[in-house]
Image (cartoon, rainbow, N blue to C red; front, side):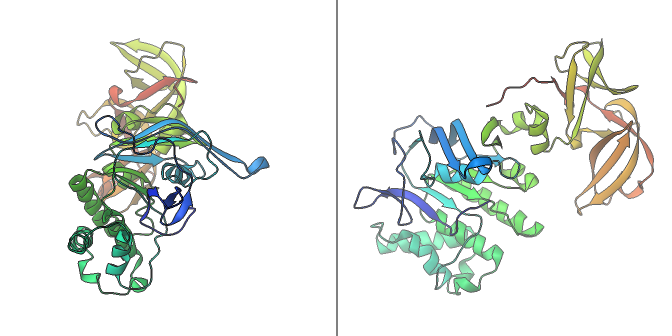
Length: 393
């Protein structure tokens, strides 16, 4: 991830030779820049094609269409090597080898913050002010923007500190301040929470959330921290092998992934394949192992080979509270806690399932590996599609 270095880079306008520049470095000019777009759309890209490498290592990113909307966060997910950072660079106009590229944007700069933020020599304040050089902004306005950007990311107390001495977390905040001082219409973030501890991620995500709300900037974000990403996401794009496998509203992608691979990518870790055996009162029962059936309200047909997915939070340990339809017994293999949630791994009939419990209370304190427990699930929380079904792209 993060093929480049630096932070707060921007695609902002042509230089004296008519070239579109990215912090002073020429970049291929996207077609139809600063086009008037319909309300809410800050950037629209179509026919993006990026090629890298050659022979067996050749990689191709091919996106038919994608858009960013003001005030919304688009989280880009996918396995390693799927092309997530390449997509960010293409949206910023940095992929010089891109072909058939059409990017339309409204007013305001497009700003990209790379995965590995770098600092210029001098103070933190100088680093942020540098983004405004040559913009024709009066000094009083520059001072006001600087103060606002530093305060927005809680680094006002560091303004006179040498930026080269800042910690990793402080550098990330500095990079975001340098991006927001430009008052961008589009912000592209590559792994903004990388290398931060849990508390650092929490605080930065809250500050970022507030900044997005206050400025109405359109954000596209690449991150491996699924939990943090899902707290921020309004929409999700899933990339697989350089193609947009699924793109839509957050809950739609989380609850109805188009394929098992997409399901795993968005955290739907309980997956199995089976056959629909019966329908009772509108509920289909899918046999995923001999004598082990899982109910769903999805419209799959009797006798049809089917794959099912259940999010961990929707698989319940049945303790007589009526939290779902009982589906069978399982043995606890392990319990792992991060202090907030306990991940419980279970095995039954050769299948492995996972559920989440709140740490430090109730069942999470009483259960031990080897315990035998009952499982339950609400049929409407079981996603099911016929094997081979599900649109791609």
